[in-house]
Image 1: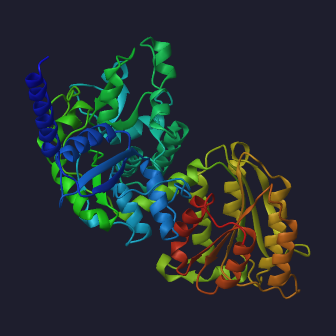
Image 2: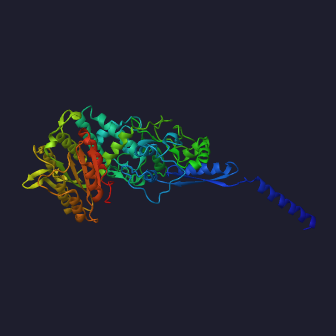
Image 3: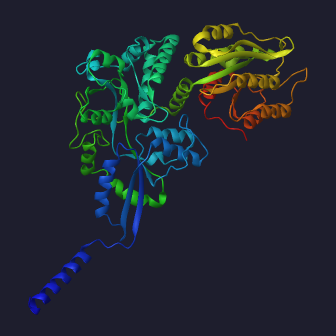
Length: 563
C-alpha cells in the first residue's frame, strides 16, 4: 500500500475516533439510584430504567439505576425497625435487608400499615402508582364452570357461604400478614362474612370463623407454593384433591397459564372487587429525589405501559398496554382502588395471627370481688361478664390444633391455694366443650382479694411442665387489680427472682398479662413481663377488653424477650 493511502487511512481512523468520542454522552459524574421492587414488576422496571438511563443526563451527570428484587414484607420490616416498630405478623427485620433509594412495593397497603405503626415512617402521601393488577379469585377452569364462569357473576358472599359449609371446596391463600394479595382478599372476605350473616351477629361470627379457619388451613408462605397446590389433572380425583379457589393477582394467573399447565386457571372477577395491587413509587432517600422524580416521568410513558403489558401487568390507570394477554371476561379498565380503614386492617391481622399461630395456653381469670363492678360503657354488665365474653369469642377463633387450660384465681379458692384449675391444659379437639362450660360456670368470689403474684408463678410452672416444642407456650392472666394477698405471699421482687430461677431458655414460656380497668398495677405488670419475656396489655375501659384480648393473643409470637 502506498504512503498516500496509508495517510488517508490514518486520517479516517482518527476522524472516526474523534466522532465516537465527542458523540458519546459526556459525564461529569455518575448519579446512582437504587430501586427495590417485588419480582412481579422488576423485569419492566429494569428495561425501562435501562432505556431511560441510556439517554438521561442531569447537570452533566449520567445516571446508573440499580433495580433489585426485594420482598415488600422485608423492606417494610426494615423501615419499621428504624423507628423501633414491628408490623403484626411480619416480625423482626432481616439484618441483611437493603433499604433502597426508591421503594416500589406491590400495594399501598404496605404504606398504610407502616403509617399506622409510625406516621412518619414513609412519605405515603406523595407516593404515585406506576402499575396495577386486580386481585381476583383463581379457580381451575373445570371448577370455575360449576360456579357459573365465565357468563355468571360470583359474589364473595356466595363464596364465603360455600367455604363455610362445604368441606369439598378447598380454599388457599398466601399469608396475608406478608402478602398484599392475600390481605386485600381477606379484607373483602371478612366484610362478606358479615353480609352473609344477614344481620345476625352470632351467625356472622360463625361464618367468619369457619371461613378464616378454612383459609388458614390452606395458607402458604409463598405464592409459588400456593400455585403448586392447584390440580395437575382434570380428572375428578385430581380436581378434588387440589385447591378449588385462591385469591391471586390477575398477573399471577396470566403468567401461570402462559406455561400451558395441564389445567388452566380462570380469573374470576368476583363482586365486590377486592381492589388491585397498585405498585406505589415511594422515594425513601431525599438526596436522590431529583433523580428519582425524573425517572418517574419515564414510568408514565406508553413505552413503560407496553413493557408492563408484556409481563401481565396493567398501567396505573388499569388500562393494559401492548402484549397484554387479557383473561376471559376481564374488564377493559379498572376503577381506582380505595384503601381500607387502617384500624380494620390491624384488627383483621390480629385475628389472623390468633388463628394461625399454633399454641398451647393456660388462661387464668381473676374472680376477685372487684370483678363484680359494673361497666357503664358495656350496658352495666359486670367486669366478669365482659371478660368472659371476650374469652369465649377468642376461644371460638382457636382451631382444634390448640391446647388450652382454664384456671381462676383470687384468694383461698382451693383450700389454702389462691388459684383453682377448672380444665387442665389439653387439646381443644377433645375438650372444647369442657372449656366453654368452665367459662360459663365462673362467678366472682364476693369478698375475694387478688393473689396475683403467687398465681403467676404457679401458672408459669404449670405451662412449663408440659412444654411443647411445636407450639407457642404461653400463660395469659386477666386481672382488674394489683397484687393484694392478706396472707402475705410473694413480693414483686421475689416473684421475678423465682420466675428467672424457673425459666429455661430452651423451653420459653410467654407471660401475657391483661389489665382490666384503671386500678391495675400496670407498672408492676410490665416489670414482670419485661424480666421474664412476654407482654402487658391494659384496657382502661373494661368494655374494650375484647379488643385487648385479641391484640394480646395475636402478638404471642412478637412480645418482648427477657431483659
